[in-house]
Image (cartoon, rainbow, N blue to C red):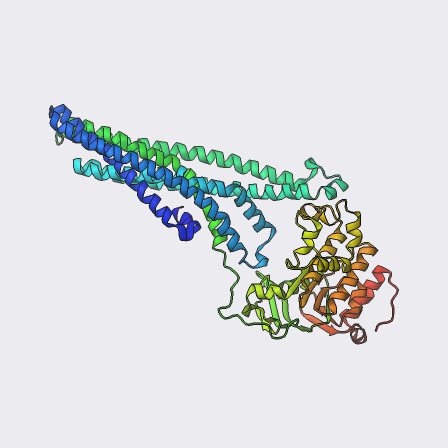
Length: 577
């Protein structure tokens, strides 16, 4: 757990070391005060009041210094908790912006959300609530065990062995609790994801009569969470009982060892009584440590979840970055890629030149979206090279690469801000006239006119105040405003009304005038307008490529694709250029 704190604190880990040093001093003083009870008791029974006074003076000094140490560690604990909570968000935020975009899946986003809501406060308060009693009780118990050796080595040996057995027992029981906590955390994360899903997609669920009671994924997630919580409760109770029995067993063995030594006449009875009293005090920190075991495991598990994100390898950045020498040019040369054991793309090669439009067509699962993600370096290829601007994407800084790209994907996200600011994200330095012109080209002026506050209307979380087609127009306006030399476009016009479809098609033509546009084509009109059509097979290979007329002449998969799409859509074919 302490290693996890040190990783979060990073350059400010010195605060943790100072805190641990003060807490350790406090623990030693606690143990020393307990040890001083033996000579105080013995000198009182012997009637040596002068010695008693000296021992009491030493004990008082230890108590006073301990009080100061306690105050100091309390202040340091609060400071460390605040520092940890502050740094946790900064460290996670700073690290996540270095991760490949492909890392951000539904599961990982749910994990980050759970940590941000629950883990931050839990970990931040663990410094004072858990680390302090852990260190104090451990150090004081060790101090007492070492001190017992000076009074009687046999009782000291029993204390050391008993303490070691308690540690083993504590690790076993806390391991049970930790395993249960992993299940409860995973169940809570799944419930969190399902609740967000249930709230966000209410229109779809209500359209099909799926109310809360009828939505099985949410019900199953809640039932799984209930079972995991019950299991964790029983394992926690069993662990506490086992730890309690183990502590009492160690104390009983200490008493038995003391009685055996007393019967053999090898120790003064008064000294033995004092030692047994000390043994009783020795059992107290051990009992507290046993009770802390489960909480420690929970805190450690939470820290491991946080550090697992911090330890996720960042997207490799080149030591000597190269700069694009051919702006707007995209080349895939023998590219292969797969998700885990599933191969998606094999030997993909094509070139997209500036001022042209390249259409990607193929059956579902052929890797069209994967190609655009490799160009944007969501992932690194398994083989081959992806070049943007004439340079391998792996040899460019991420910021330099993304400066050359505009992404217009099907899943458009708008921030809960004004329409104006959502467009302005495309280029923060854009002038007002440039923003209006980008919106006009994307067909957004009619949308502005109908909104109650025009440009300054808040569009809601995810753009809930706009339709799907209107959200995509905002995304296109961002791309127009950025004016990047390369545009990756998931056309996704199959579900759009004619007005939105018209604006999207016009925007694609406008973008293709000055940029290399690579579009995942869904409409036949987009396919025929492309300068190069890359036909992908179901196996993730390039079946053929060329202009529409050339591909139709050669026949093959593209001709079959075209015939099926025309038949399915009832299109009237126009003469190809």
